[in-house]
Structures are given as C-alpha cells and as structure tokens.
Length: 390
Image 1: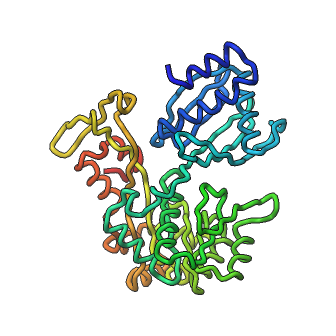
Image 2: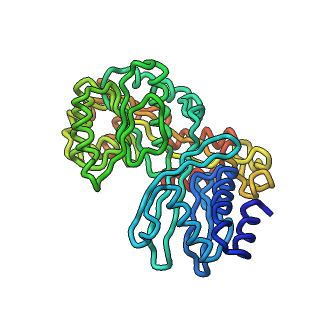
Image 3: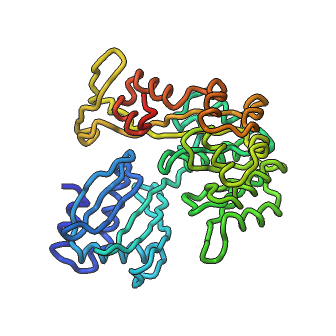
C-alpha cells in the first residue's frame, strides 16, 4: 500500500479536517514520485477519483469520498491563496511543494462541473538543470540550428505544435541558453499565460485579462523598455501577431509559440492572423516543430523485428511498457530561398512541397529513427503523429 493509499484510508475512516493536509501532501508526493506532469482530483460516478497524467497518458490512481475531496480542494485553494467559498467560477493559482529537498512549482486550477469542482495540479521542478538545449533529447543538428537562430540579434523563433508537445519547456531552455551566453547584463523579459516556472535573471509577467493586461498590451508597453530578448507565451490573435512580427523586425529577438502542424503551417497561421507574407518571411528566423512520444521501457521492451520493438510491461514501468518521453522534432530555418518561397503566398501543400528540402529531418523521419533505435514503438509514433505517422 502506497503512502497515498494509506492517507486515503486514514482520512476516510476519520474525516477530521486535521487529516486533510497530510492527504494533500501525499497526493502531490505520489505525483512527483511517478514523474506525473498533472494530478487530477475530479468528480466520478461515485465520489471523486485521483488521476495522474504520466508521459502524456492518464493513469487512474485512487477513489476518494466526496467529503475528503471537497476538503482537499479547499486545502489546495488555501495554499494557492484563492477564495475557498467560490465554487461556481473557475480559479487559478500557484503553490509550492517540496519533496526530498527539491522544490516544485504547482499551478493549481479549479473548474466547476455539474457534479462538483474539478481540481488540476500541474507540477514543475524548480531546478533549471533540465532546462538545457542539449538535455532535451533533440537531435544534434536541430540543437545546432536553434543555437544559430538564438545567436541572431533580431527575429522570431517560432515553436509549433499542439498542447503538451514540449513548446514551453523548449522556450525556457532557449532562455536558459541565452542567459548563459549573454551573462547577467542581458535584458530578457517574458509575457506568459500563466508563468509556469520562475527563471532567475528573466523579468517575467503573467497575462491578467481581468485587469486588461493582455498579450498585446503587455507587448506594447515592454517594447518601450527596449528588451533584447522577449519570450511571448503564445501568438493567439492578430494584434499580438502583428506586434511580435514588428518587434522581430526592429532589433528584438522574440521567442514564441504557435499552434500549427508543421513549419509551413506556422507561417500560414501568421498570415491568417493578418501578417503580410513578406513581413513573416522577413521577421521569422526559424520554425521548430515538436511532438512528444513515450519512450519504451529499457527493462522490458520486446524486439519484434530487426528494426522494431514493442512495449511489454514490468514493475519498473508499472506495467505500461513505457518510461519517460522523447521529442520528435524538425527545424525549418529561414534562408534567402525559403524567404522567397514564403513571399509567394502559396497554399500549405504547395509551400510544404517547395520547402521540403529546406527542413531538417521531418517528424516522420525522426520517428523512424527513434523506432529503429528501439527508443519507441511504431504504434506509439502513429498515436502521436496520426495520419502523418511512419
């Protein structure tokens, strides 16, 4: 029986509020121990249930009573400095959790449902040791290309991909790289929604729409302070896109993300937001496209052919067959020929065809390399890449 199960049993047997802090601590400890990125406390058909997201996949953990869950949610709100009695509106806050001397930032969000509040805790280690470009698992050619883009005095580095593909972690690693390269005198600022982890040496600001602090308003104000490097959490609207492109053309290095399927699609996303093709071609330095696939457990992976392995399951990976995640990536640097192609206003398919040989290995190529090396399975790659899988 795990410590979490013990706390659930103890708190259920004696629902005194004195047991609630130990239960909340045990839930977060278990999430950290399992390397979960998210811990969920959510309504179920009977009571509540705890689920963790591990390597991008949900795992059911434990069921808890309604009384214990409601008190645990109240405890999380107190730790996050939120209003405990407001259960009918969404709320977001931050707290810190320490386990074995390692401090973790936790982003807590609460959302009302017809069966009760749903609480989600996203965990981030405060250590910056993993925020290194060379430690993200990216191919060396792509790391080299990113470093070349970051050495430029101005322009946009776009990181594209769906939610949960590693965009924010990669952007933070870029900032950490720039801090090392430029030293303590660098002027680095960020506008995020929300700030997912604190970076010493970076002036970070969180978007607050309730106070009319939007991405666009924050950008306009920050640019008057002439930052050397600006991290923008995401380009979401036409105003933000226009200001970001202008910043990249006027002496600022802008690091940002966009929801797009690939490099050509990222450019077309800017165009769809009102950016002229020639402006996008001039401002963007490179587009990095990311996905994350689960890594086969090295203790139990099973070889099924000369170049393919499949998951098996053992105690080390909790019978899942996977342990950790790996990035699939492709990089589209913008050179003179690429810029010329972008200015023609082509469709996504035509643009992809023209830029095919400009990119590093595609996501599909990267997946094939991972499969051949026994790092992931073909089924996992197809799950992540869908129709474009290997």
